Image (cartoon, rainbow, N blue to C red):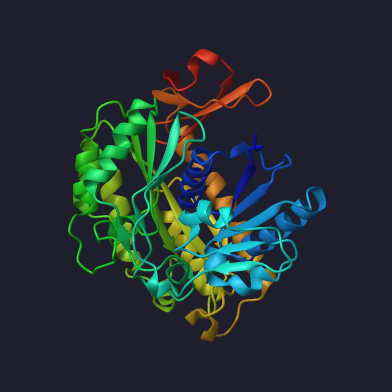
Length: 424
C-alpha cells in the first residue's frame, strides 16, 4: 500500500490569504494528503505569501531556511502575492521546488503529482493580465469564525500598492454562490462569517473582470442577512468611497451584521491622499464616520493608516495625527511605508528616513492604544453578547463582543462557539 504524503501550510498576510490556504488544504486532503502542523516534518510544505511589505518577503525566506534545516528532502511550494510578483527571485531561493502564480495556485494538486525534488525550481506563472476567473474560498480554523472570500483583485491604482499586480482585475463570486457557501458553513456550525476580498465594496464584477457590476455589495449583504443559522457577519475592510450610507443604514438595522467597520484611511492629509492616488478626501472619510456613529453610537471602527509615505512632512504627519485624534474611531492598524518595485510612489520625493517612519508608527500605535481603551471604557457596565473561541491559552479563552471588544475569561468548554451574555 502506498504511504500517504503529508502536507503542511503556513500563511503570511491577510484574511483573504487565510481563506485561500484553508481551501488549498481541504483540496489536498481530499486528494489523499495528510495535513500536518508547519512545525512537524512533512513531505510537502506550502507557504502562501503576502507582499504588502518587505517583512513578508523576508519572512518567506526565513521559513524556507527553517524547512531546509529541519527537512531538506521535503518539497517546498511558494504561492500567493510574492510568488506572482517575483517568481524568478523566489525560484533562486535555495530549497524552493515550485513557484505557483495567481492563476495556478488552485491547480496545486496537479502540479504536485508532476513534481519531483530536483536541482532547480519549477515556475508556473503567467502575466497578471491573463488571470481571470474566481475561486471561492473559506477558512475553518475553528468553528466560531470563518473568513469567506467573495471578491478578488482590484481595479484601483494606488501609487504605493502592488496588489493589482499580484491579484489582477477586480472580480467576484455571484450572490447565489456566496449564499450557498454561507448556508454550507451554517450547516457545519459556523456562527460568525467574516466577508473578505481585496476591494470588497467593488463586489459584483464578473469572474472575467468585466467593468460592469452586475450585482452590488449592498445586494449581497441583503441576501446574506436572510441566511438562517449564521448568527454574525462582519465586513472585513471596505473603502470609504464604496461604503455608502445605504450599506451603513442596512447594517444599523440588521441583527446579523455586527456594528463593526474597518475602513482604510491611509493618511489624514489631503496632499498625501492625492499623492497616494486614493479616491476620496479626508472630508468624505469624516462624513462616513459621523454617519456610522449617528446610527450606531456603540459601533467599533478600525482604521488602516500608512506612515512615512514619500513627501510626508512633519506638518503632514501632524495633520494625520490630529485628524485621527478628532475622529470617533476605536483602533488603528498602522503600517510603515516600504518601497515596492514598479510602484509610482518610487518617483515621489523627498524620501522619509526610515528612523522617522518608525517613530511615526510608534506615535500612532500609542494613539491606537488610547482610542481602544477609551472605546472599551465607554461600554463599562453594559451586557453584550460574546462569541468565545476554542483556544485554551494557559487556562484562558478569548472572544469578541458584537462590537469587537476582546474579552478574556477562564476556559470553559461549554462556552466554545456559544454566544454568552457578558457584563463589561
